[in-house]
Length: 372
Image (cartoon, rainbow, N blue to C red; front, side, top):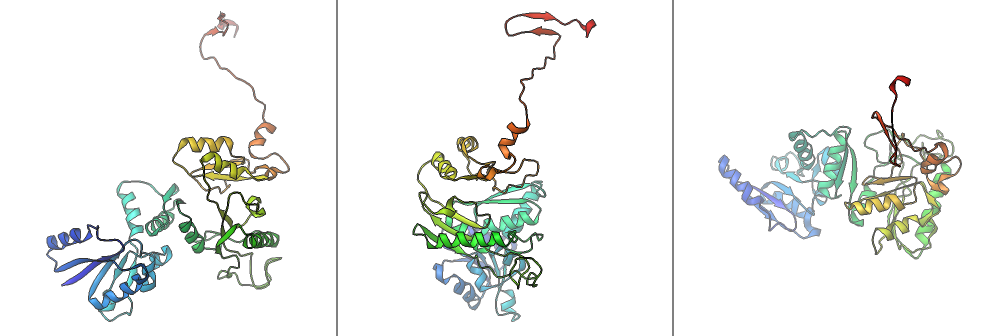
């Protein structure tokens, strides 16, 4: 008899045993399906030890999809996603490997479900809500299918995880999330503001990958003016910190132009959030994520930015718009919203498609078509 199972915590509520054993019975298979609920710090050991119990395969559910990576030889897609939801002990039982094989079927589940319902993906925007194991799989699957993927998440912890996993490398590669900075001066500014944040009493540093290892293929020396002598390009990683909304920290209100991110927890509504965002001398781009249209419209009307986005990241890459910001972000020629007033003349234009002239004062006149 083969034994399969589900590992997670909690799993006592799961219907998987009933569903799978009903399927085994219908197919005439001699198999059982059981659940495993280890403590969080024992998940990897439990997955490894299941082979000694004669388990043929496991499904992995929350919160162990990432922990499973430490106990398996992950298939390429599962390794890219950073999450495993299926463990195959076949190679171990056959004596062909010391570790089970780990797969991720969440990604295929997303794309197959969309294809089944004839939902096109290539070239479209996709919003993934959540950055856990399933959310990560959905994001990778949609990106591989040609979608532009946006991820929204409600907890700082997941944002930190994503920052720790951000891929920095060749900006022309589809697998790259972030390329190099523009020049040596930008790197110096980025590092200076990072140091100010590290030293300030109001901050808690959450991710510090500023001194990033040079990506493979970019180690060549002397190819970019101002770059370190052993690199090709200006490579830094994300720097993320938590800070109070009322802080006097300078970088919190500056334009850093690098992966320098402040996470701010505050009390109040959208008015308070927009007030915090506007409390700076700069206003290039900003975004709001919300399902409340009142909040979206309030941000649209009151945010002091040149490029505003709703339920999208503020990438500032729309070539059809006059690029630029307001306040100190709008130096030189007029940018963004100011350009409308600078280059246009506003005239009220009324077009009458009828044959009779009617005026607001109640006057009227017939149109003489012979003189037209």
